Amino acid sequence: MPRGRLRDEGARNRTRRLLTDAPAGIEAAAPSYDALAQAKQLLRTVRAGALATVTAQHAPFASLVNVATAPDGGPILLMSRLAAHTRHLEADPRLSLLLAQGGEGDPLAHPRLTLTGFAERADNPIRRAELKARFLARHPKSALYADFADFSFWRVTIDHAHLNGGFGRAGSFDAALILTSLEGAEALVAAEAQALAHLNAEHKDALALYAGACSAKSEGEWRASGIDPDGLDLVSGDETVRIAFPGPVRTLEALRRVLAELANEAQQNAAPHDQEA
Image (cartoon, rainbow, N blue to C red; front, side):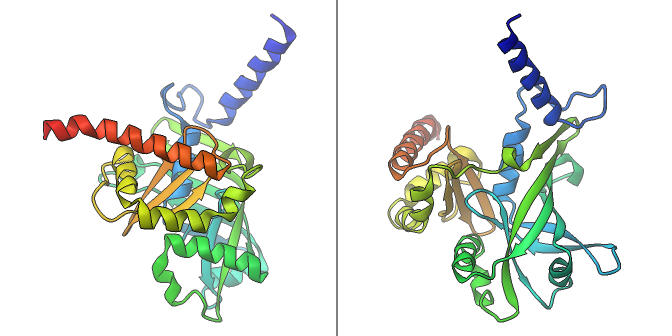
C-alpha cells in the first residue's frame, strides 16, 4: 500500500477513535450516525444549560444559566455578580457546561453535550457589545436586565466536548472540531446584524419554510437569530432550529445563494404534502 494511503488510513482510524469513547465491544453508533453533527446541533440550539464551577473550598457547584453562542460557536453567558457561580468564575475560570436536549420519556434517552473549558468576562466595551447582540438575539427578554450594573457577559473557551447521544452513541471532540472556523468570513460576520434584520423583515415565509423542512416545528412566528459560516439559527418563542448549510458559507453572496437554494428545496419538499392535504 502506498505510504500516502497508509497515512490517510491512519488519520481515519485516529478520527474514529476520537469520535467515540464507548466501552470496548460496544459500537459508538450506527454507521449513519453523525456524532459531530449532533454535537454541533446541540451547541447551537440548546437555550439553557447546567453550569458547573469550583467553589473557594474546591468543591463542585452546579447551577442553571441561559446560553447563546458566538459566531464560532463559543458559548456566551450573561450572569450577575450576585450569583455564586459568577464569583466562582472570577476566582477560578474553569467550568463545565451541560447542554441537554430533553424530551418525552426517559431523559437519558435524549442527547446531551458536556463542554469543559474556561470563561472570561467581556470587559472591553466593543467585545461586550458583540456578545450582547448575539445573546439578546437568542434571549430577547434578557434585555430587561442585561445592562444592570451587576450583570456582565462572559465568553466560554471550549477545551473539550463530550457527546452522549443515547445508548451506544457517543463522541469526544477537541475544540477545533466542534467550533466553526471564521477564516475568510470576516465580512459575513460583520454584516450579520444587517442580514438578520433583512431576513426577519422581508423573508418570514422563507424562515417558516426552513423551520418546517428541518423539524416538525413549522408553526409559529420564526425569526433568524444568528448567522455563521456553518448555518442559520432560528427561534420562535422557546423553540429553536438550526439550519445547517451544505458547506461553509463565507461571503454574503454565498449566503444569498445557499438560502435561495434551501428555500427552493423546502418548497419542493412541501408541495407533495400540500397536495395530499
